[in-house]
Image 1 (cartoon, rainbow, N blue to C red):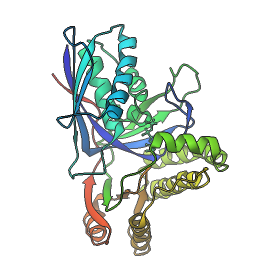
Image 2 (image 1 turned 90 degrees about the horizontal axis):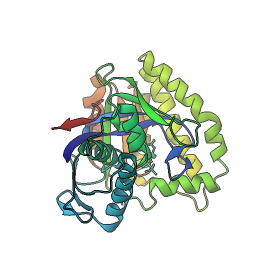
Image 3 (image 1 turned 180 degrees about the vertical axis):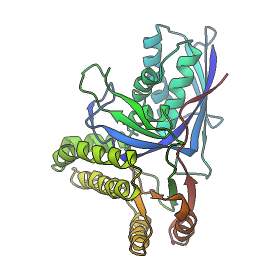
Length: 325
Ligand code: DP6
């Protein structure tokens, strides 16, 4: 009873920020992402009657208690779904091209959901798998699919209508996503905690909820018509709006560091020089830069010349879940 799955991570273009149910990981708003080809997690899960407890190895070392508990809690949900009480051995590798900064819960829980359910012999549709992965980390439900992916928030209290679906496959539209790794400290407030605090305390959060579904519709129109400029403008505005909601939280949350602002201003400069280039930022200091493949080289080189930039990794739309038999 053993299976291995590989999942790419994803970057949100329209962000998921806020939960309406913390146990089922149900979001306040729908979101949209691109699955990336350069960052992924490979996970093997084995269930056996001879295991007397769960064990989790991450990058060949035994995972910390915090990491293990998250993974085992998730396994409990999978076990409940499958009707089994077998224990498991998980071995997971985060393949990232540089040393630090880009490990992601999205690829981690997508790969774990896929490997664990396959190891238990469940034959799930992508939609069902997306609903399970969502309960490990919300953004993981989007990594089941390749290319451009929408996570529909759903309205049911049991979560049965909250899952991701593909809008365009990874071959349908090539755009470049440059991941900018900054010389910055690791984030102190997790996404889970950051969104909870924002929902509970930020007076700006209603502004987010009142406008984010319209942002999503505009982004989908831009994707369907392959209008890069329209997409870039809405993606950048949505990022800024999400970070603005956090600045209004109590106590306020600021993920940006000096290098983050340098990159933002640099993108504005490149745009004034006539290049179609836009940024997006998740719950951390690092920036992801979107541009057209023909401008990739010039944008890459100019980003590397910035003082606080440690590395830039070029990504393109990547595929959904894959299994090794
Ligand atoms: C800013 O999916 O990491 O990256 O569901 O609590 O595990 P949990 O949060 P997570 O949050 C992602 C937040 C974001 C935006 C996004 O990916 O949509």
